[in-house]
Amino acid sequence: MKLIYLVALTFVLSLHVTYNESGDDWTGTCQDGMLQSPFAIKDSKSEIIPTNTTRSVVLYPHFESNFTMGHLTSYSYALYSDWGYLTIAVPSQEPFNVYSSAFHFHSPSEYMLNGKYYDLEMHTVMKNPNAPGSIYVLGIFFDVNGKTNKFISQVMDSEKKFTDVNLGDIFSGIDKIEEFYEFEGSLTTPPCTEGVKWFLWSEIQDLDENQRLFFHKFWAGNASFADKNGNNRNLQEENDRLVIKYGERDDMSIKLEFSIFLLIVSISLCLS
Ligand SMILES: *[C@@H]1O[C@H](CO)[C@@H](O)[C@H](O)[C@H]1NC(C)=O
Ligand SMILES: *[C@@H]1O[C@H](CO)[C@@H](O)[C@H](O)[C@H]1NC(C)=O
Ligand SMILES: *[C@@H]1O[C@H](CO)[C@@H](O)[C@H](O)[C@H]1NC(C)=O
Ligand SMILES: [Zn+2]
Image (cartoon, rainbow, N blue to C red; front, side, top):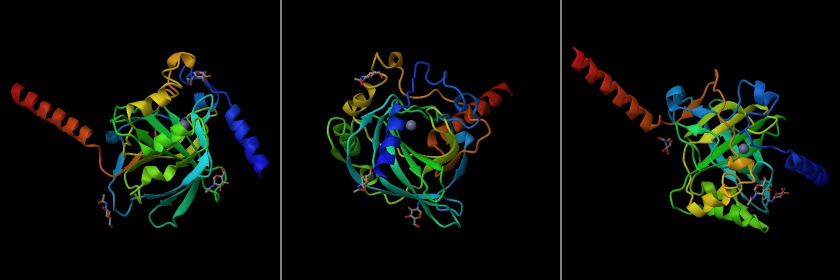
């Protein structure tokens, strides 16, 4: 068992991914796929399902700590260990668990939310043991606001030595996630496998400037890394996919549309 794990880990670490063209030169499904990730997400193009309604999906984080070291791979900074699980509660179905054995980072973010990229995006990769081959990813965004993120400090310590890293610290005081985006997409690195179920948490996490620089130095701040391209793949086409936002529509887009509405009304009044 241990040996299989080591072989699998070595395989993952040895896949060499380059960002010389931010992914535009990747081949196969990366080139031909119709449900590729990342893409630009807009609340105005998403189906909004308010919380606490009969169609609401709720995610219950049961993530925990492990004692481990981080690995700088060709495409990310990754931590491999057992990190606990996420319970997915879909209305009128038995809740089920998906287990995480890895998470890694992209800086700047890969997805764009309502026109904005964030400083850092973490991908928690999860599997359902009862559905072999299934891949779930919970995406979490971080943006510099001057507040030190306790979890990210642990991740930074794990670069040089074995460290207790607690994925659960991101969710302290939070027993459920009710506001997030859900859609189908792909892995954002080769082989860009599709059929990945994505959840993007809409609550943006704290980050301080030093913490941003920890990731920036690997990629966008590194002249030897693809000419300072970040390790974020270029945006892909959304195509005909359904994006659901559980929660509320982002206020900004409502305000913006309302302003445009007022502008049109004023212009019409002026012209008439
Ligand atoms: C949903 O309902 C629960 C109690 O049933 C409540 O604690 C929670 O705040 C509600 N969420 C929202 C966003 O209204
Ligand atoms: C930490 O992860 C390893 C596998 O990576 C697992 O064997 C071990 O049980 C985990 N420890 C805890 C406390 O969950
Ligand atoms: C810069 O990128 C190169 C190539 O990927 C890598 O070997 C090196 O470790 C990176 N430097 C830092 C400071 O992360
Ligand atoms: Zn990723």
